[in-house]
Length: 184
Image 1 (spheres, rainbow, N blue to C red):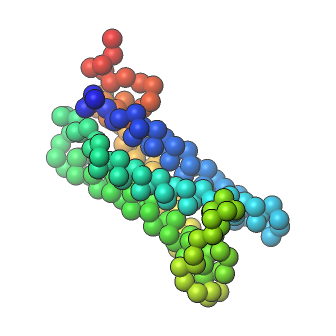
Image 2 (tube, one colour):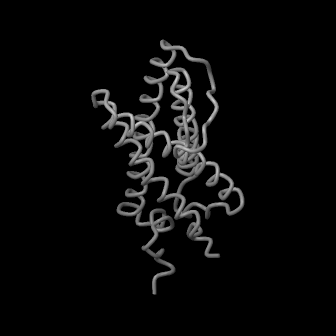
């Protein structure tokens, strides 16, 4: 394995989750502005199915990261930048785990069971409590927009490395761009 890039599995997981999270945020924004309707209920179901799927993928990613550790940071990165990058990655994983849990808690508190893909009923995590459900809705939305901000910082940092530092940080996760030292 080329230790200057992530494994193909890590890349697929990364980009699948990026697309999934983008879709979840878009769908969440659309459905939150809709009037109550059968269409809105269908969007909520899709949002919950995708959220549970992303939650499962985060665990798969963490296991894969343990089995196949990421390549080392670019030699040009200072220790402080490496610490900042590590903290950013930890924050991303924490939010990718707690946001689905907050959504599941919210659904439980609102008395709406989550049934994954309409087949697998997930247990309610807490009892029905209307006030708590509304509070958890605010928590879920705030956490989601915080994740969007973290992702924006993640993307900007990757672009900074690519265009300003001119190192291989972006290239090592990009699916179709070879690192400079591998380019022939």
